Image (cartoon, rainbow, N blue to C red):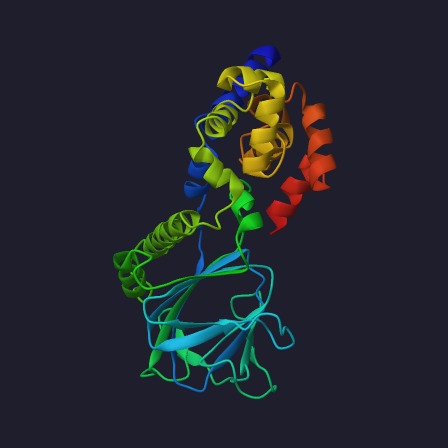
Length: 338
């Protein structure tokens, strides 16, 4: 009986991890990655002068400008970054954990500090905050202020999406016309609603807007090497082999044979386009997948190891700790405490 139960559990584990380990290239993994769950969303109504120093250290924040204009830049003291002016229709992506300032102008000193907790907002000078609640998911210093923005924050990053977070600049500004305006308008309208299922609606709208922004950013010339390499007939084919079957015992020789190049020529081409050698990329992809799979409630270390190409859970644990600095168990515990 114990053996039968163990066999059933193993089959369930394999079924749980299979969708994540098969048929997912890095672009699909990115675009399928955003999974907001109770994301923080707020609509701000602001009249100049206004300024906020954001210290929530969230992995990723998206800020559509609905009306008016403003400035997004670094905290005081960073003279290498002049910040950027933003106007109605623009959308800003901000990668944490760096702090930043959002204000009506670069010369306006922040009046409030926003911390990591949803209710952690204080005046810089210790006095009463100029920002007050203005309704459902709304605040600001004037309900009729000339500037209106929405802030949507992802409190945790998915591990497959972390490959993008590692290369995404600290700040990306997408201008009017770069992003689907309909999604922005829908999010702006829904964020102040309080209807049944509203949290789920807002989470999905935030995901869709983020995906739209990321697709635009990835189409630019400064996109990461692994994205541009996907279009190469040789390296793109190798990337798809790795992504679609991470459990296979890939070697440089095996990948080179599959794409019809010599080992040396393939390795040079892959490294030049992607920015890292084939086996380094393979290890990173496997461990990104493993880190995500480890957070699935029904996955075991054995099933995850098998799904991402490690012969034993001990081999996965050793690689995970070597590359990430923590054991799989510690990774799970840290994520559970977040």
